[in-house]
Amino acid sequence: MTEKIGVLGKQPQRRTGVERVVNAPLPTVYGKFQAIGYLDHDRGDEQVALVHGDLGTDRVLTRLHSECLTGDAFGSQHCECGDQLAAALRAVVAEGAGVVVYLRGHEGRGIGLLAKLRAMALQAEGLDTVEANLALGLPVDARDYAVAAGMLKDLGVRSVRLMSNNPRKREALVRHGVEVDEQVPLLIEPCESNITYLRTKRERLDHHLPHLDAVGHLS
Image (cartoon, rainbow, N blue to C red; front, side, top):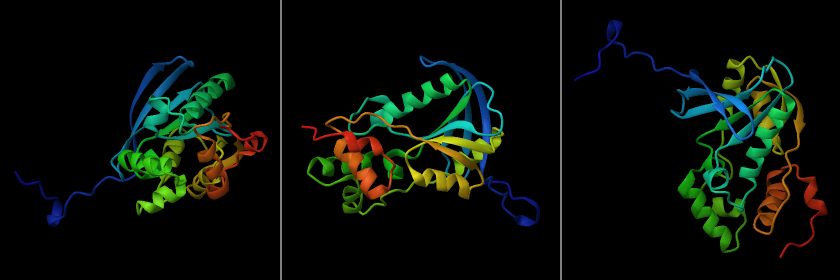
């Protein structure tokens, strides 16, 4: 069956941008949230914003959390992602209002799950997280935050207090029209399994991780 052709033989225009699809209550161990689901028409990803309380428009406590199956679901200590997600959810509940934008398609800084596992295997052999991606012929960081900005704008958010140690997230939001009034550190105590990874993020990816200065040799 052929697709119908529009007026004058033109194909119907493909939708672009982000579209709000559903809003559902989501009680969690951290508190009560609204799970607001979006469709990213540009990339085809399904996205979700977890909203707690009345956001308002300015200085909204916000976390842009990149999907990390190994950390978020499996409790991996290779990274600090799972602990950061939990800390962010607790923080917005303690604040009384805030949003955690959970960004699917960001696995492994955007390279995908299997590529991330391959990179982790190379790290186990001695490469750091940057070297491992490059050894696979992949970008060090392939993430895009346009959809996050679109979701925040749909929620009526004009400016945020961004829970992140990554300056690139701040730069990306500003570039896409969302003001960042403050960058709020989201520091997790390191362990033996992730200290090298965290130091690489600070030294090679410019993450602001001052708490590592107080950490001695972990063995």
